[in-house]
Image (cartoon, rainbow, N blue to C red; front, top):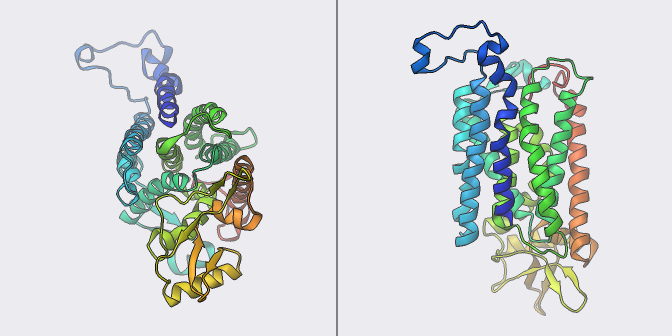
Length: 383
């Protein structure tokens, strides 16, 4: 059903194009309502030259749609073919090519503001050049994959995406509210973001009603990819990718926490989902089994993590580690809170996502003043 939701969303974006650019179309055609405008003869065959139409905005919009179409096709292929993780990790990077190409042609800004304490040494801005495109490609890769990693429980993929989308809309509204000086340099960027996020919320709410515990349908990898790419599109083309990452704190933590398994230091099974106990009806932590004792370094690391309540290990009679819990945020929550019902675990993740997101927005618009001179809510372009 993730593919169905994605297709409905894409159709909504396509149908919305005339409405998003209606005023610009009217202004650029028929003399903007002036019936006395004369159409020159050469334009009858070659077409009109629409000087006042925002071709750059339309190109950004269409490149976002094209990137989303690409990622949906690749996601459906993953669901059908069950591509291995090491092969599909770069799928979002291929999907982001249209978006990054238009960014390069239409916008091309690759400099970033330097924090105030470092400005005496580095200046007010530093140009990252091609490294900025590597960063944006990394954002476009991380967002879909991080949604896909924090998954496997009824409703958790869609619910976390909805929380992120609603918080992004709240951030956009700050720039569009009457209290914000108009015209604000970031107004168009955040209006662009809302164009993509509102239909996403609608499509996701419909999907969540069927995917919440007990789920009648499953979302598959397609939804995770397309949801993450929606956020990457609005963050990159809306020019607030750093703000976007502040709303991905649980996903960033889940990725960093999972790295020992992802990079082979600890055995990594095909699926690391919490396991269902058929006797109690609750979800409990899933474990990875050690066929051979871990190296001394890994063993000491696991011992330290257990003392910090970050992992649970099991030893044999000889004191060797034979089991350790899988390193995911879902399993970690069960280590802390004990077994629980699937819907309670999903609600816990929603609460964590919401709290972290609200704190992230507060950091963005209040604590950022500690390292930057001003918040662009009142001054300057969007970041």
